Image 1 (spheres, rainbow, N blue to C red):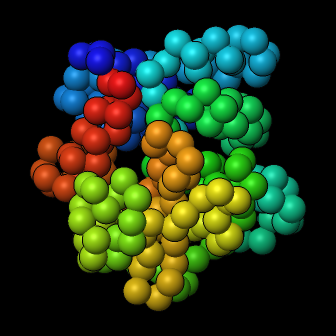
Image 2: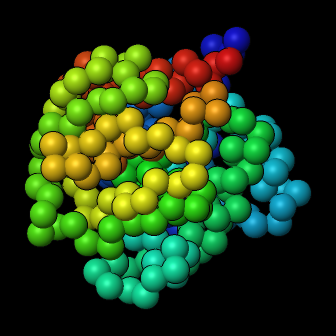
Length: 222
Ligand code: MN
């Protein structure tokens, strides 16, 4: 068991003042759990990417821009600005993380990217039907049920896209009352979990949010 697991993070290509502010939440949350945050470059040479994943004890996909809908067979229809470099990188990164059975946590864009690059689809724009603030989700199973218990939990929500069809091999482990998917997990993996909400934003104020990131880091400890 490692006291200080190394968590590789997939982050935006361009990190200006705004990105620095919100990226800091992920970094300080991981560090507060005793993990070592490590930002990965967009390297797509298979042997180098494979070595990066092999060296990591876990992988965190942070929030960011929309996924190019062509990756799930659709034209732009509500999806906003994409991040081509990050899409291409995560298309290679995510299957490699699953292949090596490293723990993975995807947050916001992270659940969407996880789903798309494992073969699922997205709602391109749900802003009209979904509140952009705090709301309840129902926890249905998986690691999330270990963390939160089965039933209703309040989460913070800042997204205009969501998982439409979950990728093959994935289980839906949280939904809103009107059926929107808010979390997916891959039961065959040690821990491959995507959540649509933002535990890192309220890590220091909310015990349940803290527990989610602590659980991820604990699995990464091995
Ligand atoms: Mn939501």
